[in-house]
Length: 194
Image 1 (cartoon, one colour):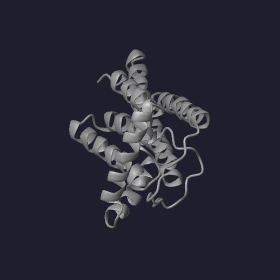
Image 2 (cartoon, rainbow, N blue to C red):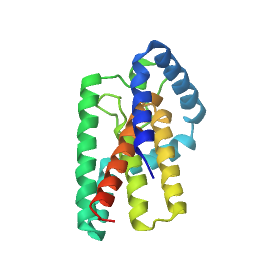
Image 3 (tube, rainbow, N blue to C red):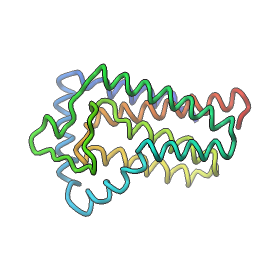
Image 4 (cartoon, rainbow, N blue to C red):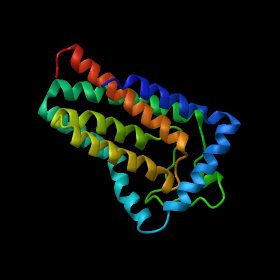
């Protein structure tokens, strides 16, 4: 599948947060999602799913890929490393405050308080990268891929529910993850690693 167009589109949509009209819509949408899902058992569910977007889980996935096929694993790890580095540079450059820091009635429900800026979402980057890379290597089943993408969507939604990201943060992070997965698949195919 071609991940280039959706990845770049989501990144550009995320970057639109700089426009006042988008920023206002971002705040309104954040409040709606945050209020709708921030009570138990929803917040508990999103706290549990949060692990799927953490760096440790991504590293475990990359180790698994490397154990299955070291060439594919090293390629995936390298591309992921570049995407994570780009995410860090953008975070420090944009330096966007998190919703719980700037919006009234936004509660931080995450188990650990984030210390870095909000834009883009690193958790969305990681979970979408794994959701598109790992299932294709393990099974190739469209059902497994659909399940992985559903889990990635839930983790991404959870970033707003837990009060730590705006929608545009999540869109840009997901776009980076999707684009990185697309580059990984392209390299695997170009060098006959699949």
